[in-house]
Image 1: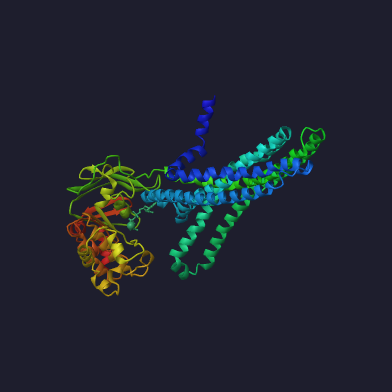
Image 2: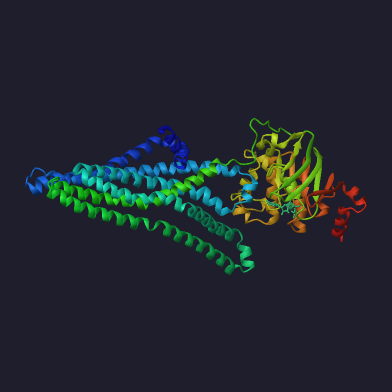
Length: 587
Ligand SMILES: Nc1ncnc2c1ncn2[C@@H]1O[C@H](COP(=O)(O)OP(=O)(O)OP(=O)(O)O)[C@@H](O)[C@H]1O
Ligand SMILES: [Mg+2]
């Protein structure tokens, strides 16, 4: 019976989450322990003052003895002084440990975030990420530790004051404890009541974050379409959702505190009535009674605070649950245990009967078969939304196939070590992401420890020499967040330089030149041509002039390979989709 109770207790969310939290507290357990134990005297000292009132009343006030008069006031000063000092130490240590724990958690969560696969990011907004990976950690650590200190201080203060109650009169104490228990009972229902609301609050807070982010990133679209009213309305809606949730929360929890207040007042009234009776019947002394009432009134403060704190503690606990939910989630795309490294591609890349869907039931690739030999350049053309990008997304395992397999040298890519697979592939997208920092920082992302000579070669091959030498600070010029200080073609060439320095044997170019005007396209095209030399290349382009030299052109239409061959072969083919595409573009 007892064992099963312990088992049950061990399975509660609270215990599970606290035991997970232990990993992060463990390195600082010494300080954490001091911080916690120090709350015992802080709380208990309240009781000493209440307790001292009994001899003071009985000896000084009633019997007019003078032995206590000298040192009781002194005692009070010394005790409060000690209490203040302990309080300071506890606050300091708690904050210290709390911040350290929060750093540890955030770092681990961030590492987790980095490893999540593309589908995870597809399904979430930037605001959710901020809220759940950053906000929730702050809420759980900060909230928990700050509140925990208050909570434990108050708890020990309550316990010691209850001892004073019993010391003075067990009959009165029993009445008081029953009343306090009744006052605290409603608190046990809080968590259940607020759980769904706090989850909704997190999401509506996240929506607000997302909107700030979109306003930052999309400010030009907002200006050019005059979206001021539209955005403001959307924002106002979000704020109102938050407001409504906040009010709902108060509706469910706001009554708790006044309710406790009322119950406790009834209790005090009952005690005074019963206490007076006990004095008259000489069961207790007047000193007992005064000390008892003082303890009871002092007890009310911590009990009320526990009530007020309880909400925040519960919210912190819920935030902690959300944090560990993320921490326990396993990214869907990872290396198998002990998977061998892919050293270098030797012979072929093969798509074997590949089917793929982003969303269940909506097939994007339909039984695709394709073989590419090492060193070949393969071009994908076809209708927009046909599945070209999806084809190349499968190779670095941004997504995994739904059925079939992508193989390199006859081995399923899911059986290779994931990092080594990606080390073998450079991707240049149409809209390349550059990180804030300098041009050099961004190029070095391709290879952290590249020498100056390697950088120079990459710059030359990416046709960036002229541009960089025109800059006062050259390679060390800051490019702004997301490279906003650069033109489209310049960004593109920095991305190409990054791919050069990575020097991976497989290169994927997804519309790498389509966003550019003719002049810059010629420059970028030269850079792209340099990059394609001696590598296995996947190139996607709408402009067929850029793909005509490919070893193999694959027309991907509506998720299927419609036709395949060299430029000449496809042109000669009767009813060729490629030929008709080519002819319309020539016009
Ligand atoms: N992350 C995603 N989640 C859900 N569906 C997606 C996702 N990315 C693409 N799709 C869908 O998959 C289909 C194929 O998209 P894909 O990007 O492969 O087309 P594409 O051939 O590269 O088109 P384009 O030439 O316009 O770039 C489209 O219908 C698209 O709506
Ligand atoms: Mg595409």
